[in-house]
Image (cartoon, rainbow over all chains, first blue to last red; front, side, top):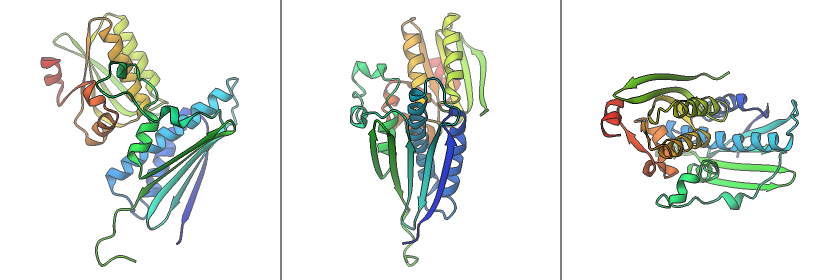
Length: 153
Length: 113
């Protein structure tokens, strides 16, 4: 199956996040694989993954490495949009952030961080997070809307 | 720099902060600073109007949760105005629709709180 690949390497700085969202959303619309609502989901997913990546890099390089980057790869096929965000920052334990306190739990109000991973999992069809001391890789996939009957192939 | 609009007005004793643009890790610090400033000035009844927000992610949600806690510990309240489905969706998924009072209009928010 044909796969178009778009690779971005962007400085690991918050001000580049909006650009990444714009490029990924634009990529997903090239050959409209996703409807508008799913493109919006993808923008949130990518924003969360890149925020974590940028923060991981900035935490590693507290002194500040102006050349530090994160990588974002979009892979478009007929069936899905796949995005891989990778960084060489300090890793983390993705399972520790996998769940939130229930909404009726009073401790819910203490959660100001840690909402990102649950959003990534909820808004994508596939989400895979691998992390170790060398960095983190987040792979997500959003499935294409089914083609209208008769237009398959 | 990404634009984040923050416009403050007054309505029946509530401070109404109208936010516009994209709220993410780049812009959220400005929103946090403004909300912390309001509470510091004793403005603890706050409406945050999200109608002109095009995008919000968990960093932005975290700022709002932080502000809600801050006003509540000062016997105040914080209400949101939001009708946009793409913004409401992130509140729903994270369970925050049950944490915040979310209204359709500023009028509704300031009447019911």
